[in-house]
Length: 113
Length: 109
Image (cartoon, rainbow over all chains, first blue to last red):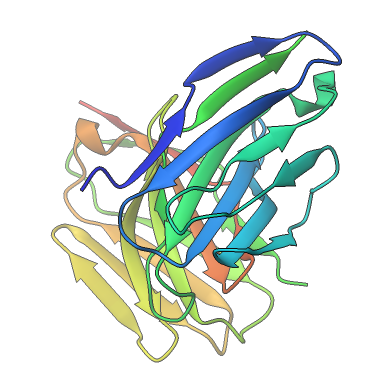
């Protein structure tokens, strides 16, 4: 199993540009998550999904959108990128919240200039 | 709202020392508590998961305990090695899983 994979690893955007961060897991996990990690801070939840077709907002959803058309994929869309969205983005998955580990992807480092 | 605090923020120890990292949380109604390791520029690697009905978990030189009544978890690392140098994060809850800011550990050879 590849686990949780993310693309791209790095990206530089100009203010106002848009992009999609890709996340795929091959563990047949129902739950998937997007976090952002800013320097010296803990991880903040952006969006999550409990299964295909179901998504919900986390703590910091503004400026982002998600979709979950399949169990495997959970892309994160940034519209009109702003410097405040400069961060490292992590995708994660778990089979269910009760008694199961959360597994993380390697992250996407995004800079908005 | 769940809040997770990790103390200390940074720790430097000589190789071979046993050490304890602390994690406290405000809401004891948690499904489980998970400890992660993060190396610089990398993602998070799961170390130990303690289910809410358990009091501790062990993996090799690592032992994590959970005391829900006091809102505390500890990660014990035995016989520390330079390769243990990393940031250790704890996370509590369900969805959302709430993370502490981490303890940055340096093990000096």
